Length: 178
Image (cartoon, rainbow, N blue to C red; front, top):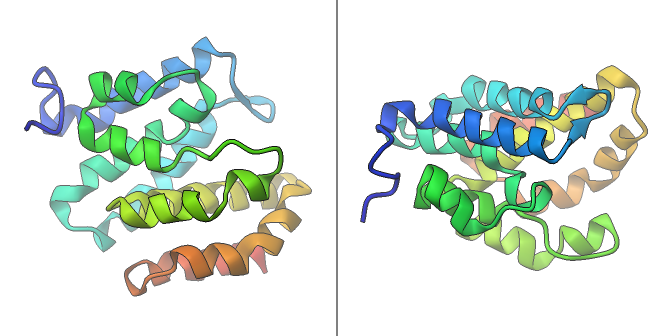
């Protein structure tokens, strides 16, 4: 089984995922505050690149591609199969694992099944922590009320996803939330 579509060379996967995700969010008029949603995705990828040395080199392109696609199923009316057709099975599995559950509140959407799916999917915790780092940094820079929410959630977030391999990322998250 080929994990990426045969038309995409593994070296081109990240750039392909970027084009796919940026277009998907633009097509649904998705925004990140006052900016195009691509600004958030770029911050997630920037954290992924900063910490990619924590991953086996062969896994980095898949994690970075998923940094781009992580919200496409949840926010862009796309399916697992849409992501799989565009970016391959590995990226689709990551994107699916990072898609919130149905729920009326943040707690319901990020429930035990959601975190279990992240833990069960290799690389998903790495991408999720990159996402949280980007959200925390943006919230801090913008003076957003969400920063307090991330602070309240952090003990639970860390209890669900912390691993020794990701400890440097969690250290930076703690500093951003301090």
